Amino acid sequence: MLKEDSFVDDRIALQSLISRIPAQKRKVILALLAIAGFVLIVAFLAGGVAYGGRSFMPISRIDVTEILNMERADILARAGIENQTYWTINKTQITTNLLGIAAIKDAAVEKHFPDRLVITLEARKPAAIVMSRVGEAGILQYVDETGKVFEKGRSVSSAHLPLITDVNMQNPYAGAQFHSSVTSLLRTLSNISPVLLSHISEIEINWITTGGRLDLYDLIVYPRLSSIRVRMNADIDDAYIRRMLLAVKTLEEYPRYTTDEIDYRSNDPVFIPKGGSR
Image 1: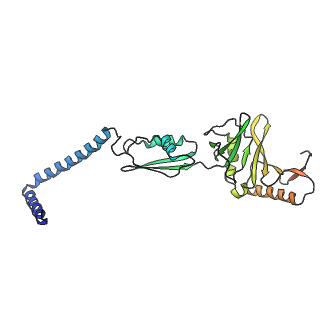
Image 2 (image 1 turned 135 degrees about the vertical axis):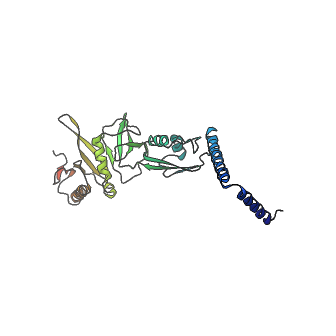
Image 3 (image 1 turned 45 degrees about the vertical axis):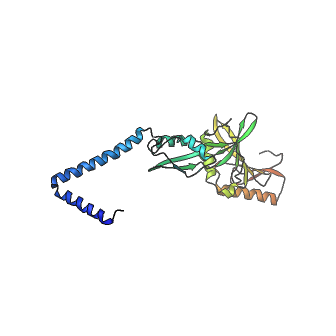
């Protein structure tokens, strides 16, 4: 067994040997040793990359901040990370691949030495549920405030989101973009209180063709707990919806005549009797 004193003696002997080397030569030797160490490190790293990047520093940990309504494996497959290593990962390409998924609004990719990848995703948030025609049937799509269709076919589970009908889009696909006129309505809805929206079951777009224009419309709104529909302007807001709901409640509690529609496109609501003209 080696004693601790032997190491001390060896170190003293080495220091004595180095001290006998002239100062100029000593600097040269130390410089050569530093260069040799640097060359070895570069050769080690270059050798790993030249090896193909398949077994040299493979990515062993991938953190995804939001999984969305997709399987984690599907997200990683779409990202194109399989068989990648720290040296072969292309962050720009992975980001582009992720943004090709309709449900993802934004994505960022970060590498952390030596084997970790962090993927930060921002999911699209639904502003409304849209009903479009596919052949003779209707299909539901989740649409965000930009008018992007990011999911279709899922069962309706968000009670605070209104259903929008008659949007004039046939067979929309995930990733499809609605016309700017519809997008303005979706952006408006995204700024309205979810509590107020929960009182509305459906918003029907009533298209108006004037002078050949096809981007004008007003709305037919169906309160969730009433059989009375309300015609409203497209530029709705919280205060406008509160007044509409109050008019419906007043009419139901103090009926003066039978009606199933209120025209609230002006400052004062107009009650339309059943079978009456507007």
